[in-house]
Image (cartoon, rainbow, N blue to C red; front, side):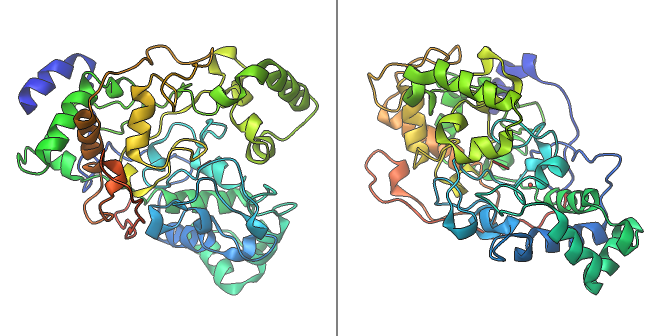
Length: 393
């Protein structure tokens, strides 16, 4: 069966080396100007977890990207920042974010380094007026001073925000998680590694479900993303009558100097505009980045706004042709190729079983009945931190 599937897909494959120790992943991309080091990773770990880098002294990067929750804040639909202020976006996982070509749901940051600086200043995240309080701490505290010197060879008066950003990114690049049951079955040939249901789900993933069109698999690695942005009907269906008004108002505000990062996390309707807020193209209206499916079972709820509670609900949304409730009208900007799937309940269960088989060994959550047709109880994740070396909104 596996040999036949490989032959079916061979035309779309290209060869890339596996990342050592993480079956199913490509080589880790590391910027030339920010090489990994033990000292820098340890420094980034401390910065990532320092709650003093928020205006209330209560929120760190790890608040919304907790290791025990798959580096998200599951089960929250959208993240909470200082003073329990609620943003508009579901926290994406840091796991394997090192492989993303852009960061955030709308791709508004080009790298882990750039992404790391924004939550500190967002009023619904960490709420600082500037990065100055961070620099004051790291330039004056002896442990930080020693760590920055060991990592970058700089003295206290030479420490800049760029160093902070590089250290956090270096830490996030260690959060690499492949080696799932599916990887062992597909790439290593362990025939009994996944269930019969997961095998059937994979056939559907490649065929009638058409999932592989966006959640891409290569010959010897799989990130399960095309790194592109698609309107799949989430959010946009709700604002359809006002799209022209909202888009026009946003563009006017952006031209007048509005901060895009703040706008998308404080206004739910602006948030639903998706990639359009970045590139201002009508073809990007309501488009959001294709997320990886690796470890997806660890991080409910789903979609950019956390509006779908379970993997089963996600599949049903696609089953309905890009609407959450069967028969609802689709939005005018829905990405091409999204149409009703005509799956059976067993098909949906099998697709869910396949996605659950993408969980890295050792990061297994309790089983959830809600992901099955007969289920009724949502689960709480129980994730252990990823420790292999190599990270959001």
